[in-house]
Length: 309
Ligand SMILES: Nc1ncnc2c1ncn2[C@@H]1O[C@H](COP(=O)(O)OP(=O)(O)OP(=O)(O)O)[C@@H](O)[C@H]1O
Picture 1 (cartoon, rainbow, N blue to C red):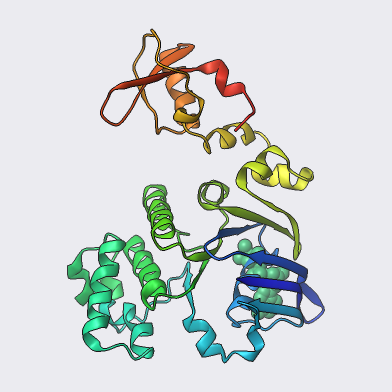
Picture 2 (cartoon, rainbow, N blue to C red):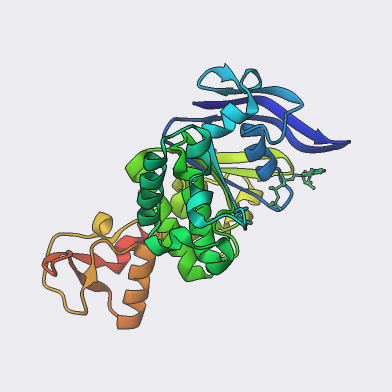
């Protein structure tokens, strides 16, 4: 769906992005990570032509984006950024309805869309009439995401959309984004500094360093087969094993039901959380239960060491 071919961008003599080639498939959630200044935001902004590339070509559905008027292009791509960028003198309703109104939707359809998005982002319907400064930072970021989704864009570009949030709200919003992605099947390109966020959300991660892509792959590929020390260090050398465990669930590793004692753990728990349960209970195996509390298996601590996903 989106194809970058040998794209470069320089600011004066400084190369911000160099010879970047990337393919983003329809429905994929791609996360760009890398140190500060490595070219992630520049890459995102080249996709909607907020920044024009100097060399190379960017194709959207096979069409060179330079042949598309920037406004038309941006209506096909929702854009959510850390600073939110809500219009302060407009109500939440008007902020969210910006793109649908630009697209000429009838007023009743715009209102219905706003109500639908407030519900989707788990925001109180009363907020529609409030102004951005009457909401918390986390609520404003939800409104920012709602606004980016409002015109039902094919693609969602997100630059640190959950930055500057407390960890609990952040995890809530990550779960919501995952749900929206699974429900809508939208193509999402997201930039984050938070490696755990990237590992949780990404279908594919792209690791940048100094304007170049160092490695791309699924979170599991990056954790188990990093191409070099830079990737290893960037993902967190010490915690790599635990991070990998966070990608798997108890259900994937458990054996059939058997006699074992201990406080049961849920089959949908991730394996990193399961490690905590083993440590707290000081046992080598634990019973596993489903949502209804019925015994469905046994998890052995030793099986967690098996490197197979
Ligand atoms: N408008 C600009 N003018 C000059 N240099 C710029 C401009 N925008 C970005 N740069 C430079 O280009 C490089 C890449 O910046 P970019 O914002 O893409 O990095 P990033 O990986 O998104 O960083 P961060 O994680 O800190 O947001 C940096 O060295 C930055 O200083």
